[in-house]
Length: 310
Image (cartoon, rainbow, N blue to C red; front, side, top):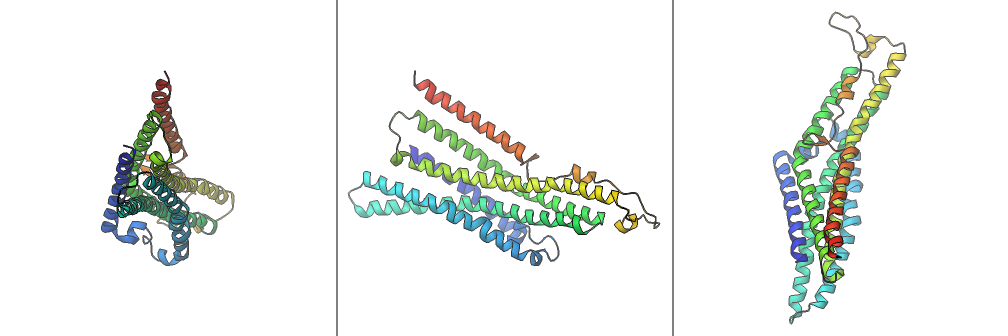
């Protein structure tokens, strides 16, 4: 019973992940999917930073810090289980062991790779926002700021649109999986040990790592986008307090007359960020998710542990 539910949850997450990645790659291609070619010379300008994010920030971290340790635990669990349930044919047992490990590795790699791709897309946008923040140190052209920010805001909305169904589905599937897992382990009348419930531990670690990777990357780019407003306010205050000719700011009207310094209320009112159907993924949303999950955990424990001891 335990193994059937674990396999079902792993297959569901892998199917959702594979569908999201394959549809977007087939429709947009690699560069448009990663949003690295939306401006002239952008790919050449940030090539080294892109490479660093790919090598260090996503896939190497994914492979060496999460997949391999979980694979070791999964292999140990399958070997122990095979020793306890050794069949008449040694070859059948070995084939079953290998098939179980290979299938788990395949499903886990698909799910975590999709999470890593989303993390990579967000990290690329972090590079662009950091470059945009440096514009305030070397440029005073307001129209240039607005054009760049409109471009960044647009691409964040496109990223949110492409990934919102994926983020919502994996959150729902993982929440349901963790709740059912807690129900089964705490309400199980028999002995729960590494042999019969080891898959629960491995599956839970993989799922939690995946959802944390997505939420962390989404909240990171959201806060980078929201921090632009403070940089703009600081820049506006410094420009206002200095004696710079407004004509140097590119703020002349069609008759050649200088206009008054505009406010930066546009950047304050349009912070941007990764959204899921209008909900910005930031610390506020993450706190809400935490308390929802905590409420579910306490509800399950109340139904299984408290009532079963009567």
